[in-house]
Image (cartoon, rainbow, N blue to C red; front, side, top):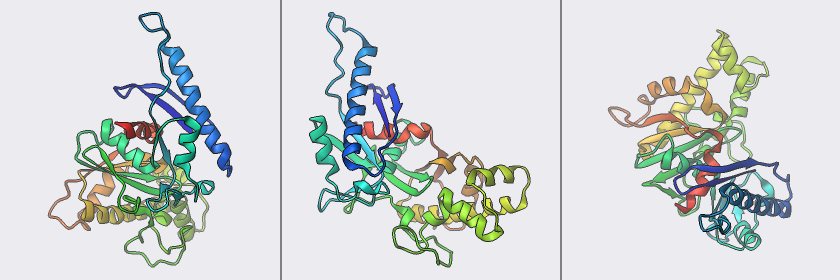
Amino acid sequence: MEVIALGSGGDALLRERTATPQGNYPATIAAVAGLVAMAERKVMFLRGCAKDGTQADATGATVGIGIPGAESRASGLVKNANSTCLIGKPLKRDLELALGREVRIANDANCFALSEAVDGAGAGASVVFGVILGTGVGGGIVIDGKVLSGANAIAGEWGHNPMPGEHHKDVCYCGRKGCIELYLSGPGLAADHRRVTGVDASAIRIVECAATGDAQCEATLQRYEARLARALAQVINILDPDVIVLGGGLSNIDRLYENVPRLLGEHVFSDRVATRLLKHRHGDSSGVRGAAWLWN
């Protein structure tokens, strides 16, 4: 769990992390409230005294929160959260009671996309699709600087569409077969390598070995790149974004930005692919920055 305090120009005044209470909803509410209070105290201290001799006021800051799920438009309760203790809970209401102010909540992938669209890799682009490639696969859409959440609050959730071009046998945690997440997440990359080679290796290890000439690891990465290109091509054919920004642990595989764009043309319904595939600018702080930008 991370908190960041942004100045009006987007400069980070403070950034701190703490362990997330596991499976404990009341403790999670208390932890968030504690982080906000701590951040306000520290920012006020760092700013020191105002010019008139009074203490600079950092209290009453606007609060945006990114969550690994979404708020149901029908009930106002959290759904689709892999932090399962949040599911079915009135998170926004409870946080507003704890903090004594309005809060804005968005999916963490939406927050990532917003951060990168406002002043990150996608700055200046009209339509940005932000992709999370980590322990799961998520996505968010930003159009003209505003998050698109959708009628069902699931806009950008491409990770739970079926992976095109595969014979689907495996069942995702969501209950569907053959989700993109099963192939393009870090665990999905490791599972594919294990299925083909019989060898257990982490995604990081596979990348390292491919770089040293390991043929099996190289083949695994080529399969990954081909699948990523097919899956992103579906997004391009529907949304046609100016920029796709990658985040999450697998976004740090530098070869993706050279190899995947070369493969997109086979699947995109166009004579050329103008969509740029870019690496995040703000790293693992992009999501929490985007939460703050919900008030922009």
